[in-house]
Length: 219
Image (cartoon, rainbow, N blue to C red):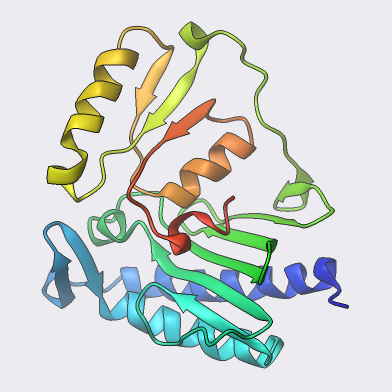
């Protein structure tokens, strides 16, 4: 039986260490190191190195777990547990030195999510939760807002990089929400957006076309 509370504490440490790496690398980061995976979808040596570090640390923590990792440095082969990791959620933000950007780590069994940790680097904020427990930010319990009326809602409506597939959805959302809600923002990190909903900063978040690594830890 896994001790999920202790395991979550260990994962918080690992995520924070990866975040410190991202923070230090950002000081000397150069745009020339960026590669375009797809149109407007970027990756750099920082994403890849962060993922390698995470895989090594998490493998030592729980050797019987496989991986679903955005940059593909490790794989899942039907192990009883699976780490779902995004070494840098918000790469475009990171490239432009624009917050937020996060390290995201989730652990799941074959059936369900067991824990999630999201470390938002720019604000030094670690969001975390485990199955059967509550949700926390830097040791303090958090909860979602109690806004009931859509006209008061402060929302994040994201515009992902794959514009051709998403354009009609985006136009529909803006048409239905703009001027009818309390405010609309975009922040460039799905993980941060979900955590901001969990902590009551944001009342709702809408996005599609995202991978398991984008949302699992925050969910």
